[in-house]
Length: 292
Image (cartoon, rainbow, N blue to C red; front, side):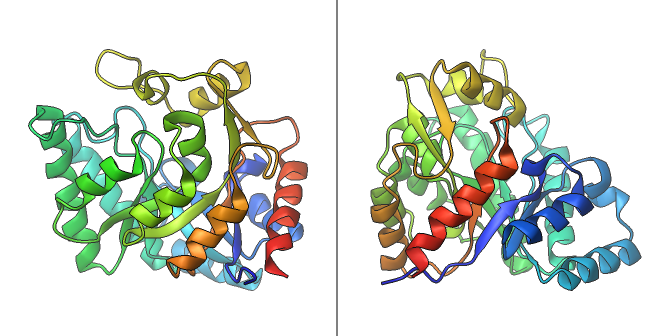
């Protein structure tokens, strides 16, 4: 059965700023966009009520909609109890912004979930995510955790403890292939009750590595997206590639999304490479093959 999911792109992938990035997204054929909203011009603190209305109107004038905002605050996610109050507050404000812009999904990284539920870091993350879950549920929104740092079954087990679906999943198949070695199609089936947004990304795993080295945890240096992209470029652990050039089996992955009834966005993410626009155009064409 042909795909019916809309295609989105991450505006920041173009490296042009928000307004020019939105224009470029429309130009390359995207139907929706994801925008990073942590600092700079998209920081919730920098957007008045009037500015939010104007931006929403501008996006609509381009014939686009927002698939999600990116609210990844970097560092160790929600593993540090001392940092969590400020991070939780900032996350709530990003969700408020998303709702004002006509979207109810904020994607984020929460840090690597420890294997042992009795681990103090597990408990700290659980407390923070439970608060976020309650807030999102009250607002009819979602904080969508990006897959990658842990296997799908372990992430599901953690989400099941939060008492609701306000903390959900942004499914990234490439992260599974590149970091945990998990099968994306099976991961979709395991996390089916939580998936509210997806990234369309591809890549290959070059060698096994402790996810803490890649994502940062405890004594390891906390890594942000830019540093992770640098690691990708160096080719040490994995390599991100345009859609169809890596090890994600998109035929089985898309089939699994259809199987669970997912009707949301397939949002193209391209964090590395010398020609992101060209790669994004190729990725859109790749997905469109499955829509006919």
